[in-house]
Length: 176
Image 1 (cartoon, helix red, strand yellow):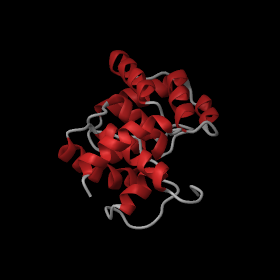
Image 2: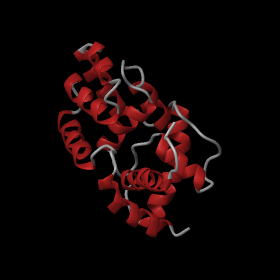
Image 3: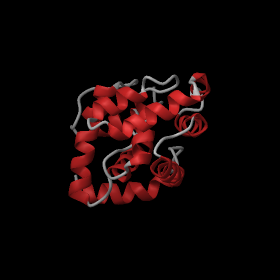
Image 4: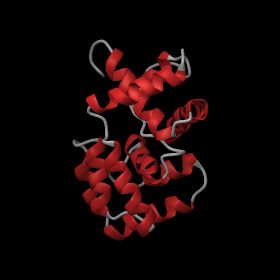
């Protein structure tokens, strides 16, 4: 399969999906880089974009903890550690944590979820279905996403959006 064509076609299709709006994540990323951290309200907004049903859990986190954790994520090197640190906040699992990472550094990180996993599985980069994700699953997904980014000249975030859109387009039946 021509990865460059797939990414180009499905980046255009992404606007027709109900995925996280890239421009919203870009704005969060600008704030994150400028402030050096994210506030509880900003994390709530990111979580709401990712998963409206569970976003309210973010409000259980003390504001100081949100600022501390997100400041620390910037200092941590490994992908697993970054995701695991964010997942220590109430309301965050790996998929929502990936939104924070993609906002901060779209060149290296992507928003991942069931649809992205399914596309990577369809393309024979992963094996089997997955409905919930942990930090190690993020690491498993981000490796081929970065390979695709390097091959296509797109950012990791753009590749993630395209993989999401591809599944949205080709999936038959329900998501879960």
